[in-house]
Length: 74
Figure 1 (cartoon, rainbow, N blue to C red):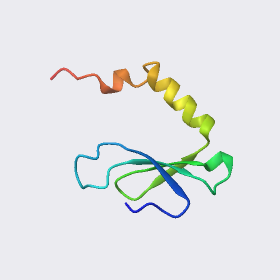
Figure 2: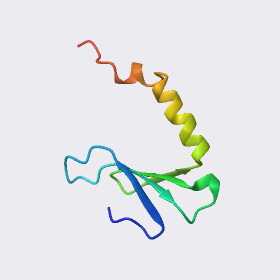
Figure 3: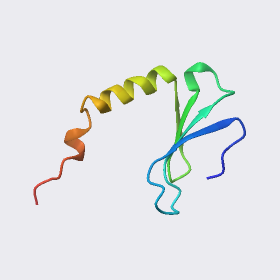
Figure 4: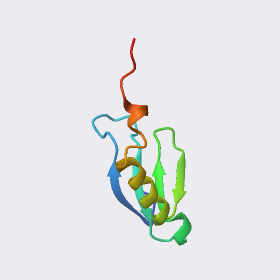
């Protein structure tokens, strides 16, 4: 994905392929409630505030997604 004008690239999640991996940006021109932008490999995006991103990161660090990522018994 090319970086849209006014966006600052922060991270690419995966990046080991050329499939349009999810990316995290800061939209410097957006209002505070929409400043963080996460894009997916289908061209969609979500926008959130820095505070919402902080909550998300805190939850992930606290293990909220651990069960989702645990291997399932086959």
